[in-house]
Every structure is written in C-alpha cells, then in structure tokens.
Length: 223
Image 1 (cartoon, one colour):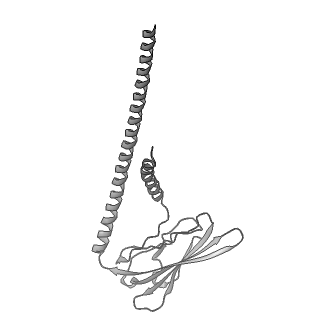
Image 2 (cartoon, helix red, strand yellow; image 1 turned 90 degrees about the horizontal axis):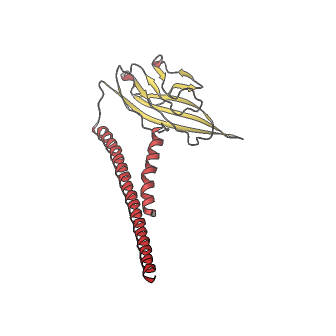
Image 3 (spheres, one colour; image 1 turned 45 degrees about the vertical axis):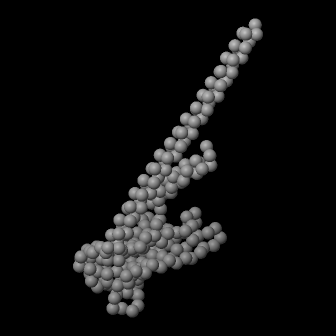
C-alpha cells in the first residue's frame, strides 16, 4: 500500500478518535447564557478547565454581582469543599449550586437562580481560585469570567444565535458525511489494490504453469 493510501486511511480514523474523545464529556469552556426570563429559573454558567490533568488540585468558586444601577461588585456566593454560602440578601433562598459534584478540583462552577426578577439584571463575575499541588510545592492560579445578564418578560432568540446553531449542526453533519465518504473511498482503494494483487499472482501462476508445460513438451520431443 502506498504512503498516500495509508494517509487517506489514517486521516478519517484520527478524526473518528477525536470525535470519540469529545463525546466522552471532556471539559469544554463555553459562553454562558445572558438572557433570563422573569419568574423562571436561570443558570449562571461558569466553567474553568484545569490545564494539567495529571496534577491534583483543589479549587473554590466565588460569585459577585453588580446591578445595572450600581458601580461596584458585591460578593454573591461562595462554594468551597461542598459548602455553599449565599452572602447577598437579595438572593437568599434563591441560589443553588449547579456545578461539579463531589470533587475537590472543581471545573464547573455554575449556580442556579430561582424565581428570577428584573432586579437581577446586571453584571456577574465568576472567580475560580485553584491550587495545583505538585510534589514539592503548590501553585496558585485564578480564572475570572465576567458577563452581563438581562432579564426579559419572554425569551427571545436573535437571528445570530439561530444561524450559529444551524451552522453548528450543518458542520457536524458535513463532517460525518465526509468521514463516511473517505472511509468508503479508502475501502474501495484497498479492495482494488487487493484485486490487482490477486490478478498479478494469478498471471504469475499461469506464466509459471505455461513455462513448465513448454519444458515438458521439449523433453518429450527430445526423447
């Protein structure tokens, strides 16, 4: 098999392995939703992936809130060692942990607001404080995400959001179709190469058989 044929076979296999890895639920940082509906629940999303998976770590999450008519952030919520704490009276009994479960190394620091009100419109800040625990020392890292949330009477979807979602599905379908086509093409190339090898082997066998027959005929004539 030529190097080109091997490359054509390896490319779709590599893409399939990558797709399988993504399907196993790897940590992926995504932008949170920014439009909440009044009198309904709303998830404040915040994900911060640890870059060194082989290093043990512990992490805490702190949330801050600044209303649309305020100029400074107020501490809103803390989560450390599975102990949540709401510090802003405006959100008492309305905040629930919605992030990573039963782990010291938090990667999902999302929280959930119950019964959203128009007063919840404002800027939210999520801060991860992570300590990487190496053999001889500890290394402190911080990750901060800031985003604005608008509370509306009804949920609306902008055209850009709809188009981006459609393009995402089109891209996924296109990739899968391309993988199938590549695999079929490679299979046919391999099958064709095998058939050609069989034909060459058969031709060589017939040539040897014919040569042996001629030799036998020559021996009989000589006698």
